[in-house]
Image (cartoon, rainbow, N blue to C red; front, side):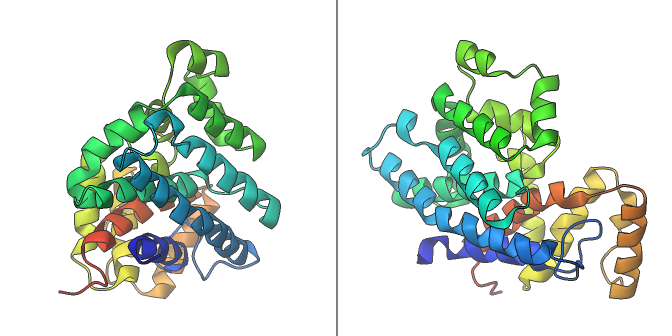
Length: 274
């Protein structure tokens, strides 16, 4: 589907771009990169469906309580887990499908994704049904995503509370966004997302845009050593990567936010023309 091509390309480039010390790249040894590519292809199978549901909502053919975004993310995570045997990256799946839904909604209204982002986000993420929120929780449980489930547990988010307080996907995204930038698609992080998408948008190369956005997000997270990543040779990048990993860092949780920044930019300036 032509309308979702910027999102699909952004996902693949985000995963494969080499200058992301501490995170997955195409230079990662072993089978993980290949499995993550398969995972991304599985997620992409769901992107067009998410886009279509966003259009249906904008057209009034379904109501927000029936959009089933949480269920769709859950299905994508389960599908990826079954087919790769590797625990998926929940933030990437959530970011890709949520952004595609928002884009479908905006496109149907004849609005640009960036300009319509706040309004569509408020509707799609914060007015959905608690049943759909539960579907996302069940998906995280199905793939044994310990880090995400632990964060929700610390914040007192249980299935009973979701039902009692009618918690929405937006509520969960705000909590999960503290540990996984793929869940930054929420009203609290919107301004940051737009800021990072501007960093990506000035670059002609999607790969360079990934490097710049990733480094900016990492610096915000306190990794000052990535502040001067621009112009660094690949030999030095690999040294930084080894240093981070030797200290126990795994920065895959920054991939979702990097993807969102790239995808927002790509949706406005595609294919990266001046």
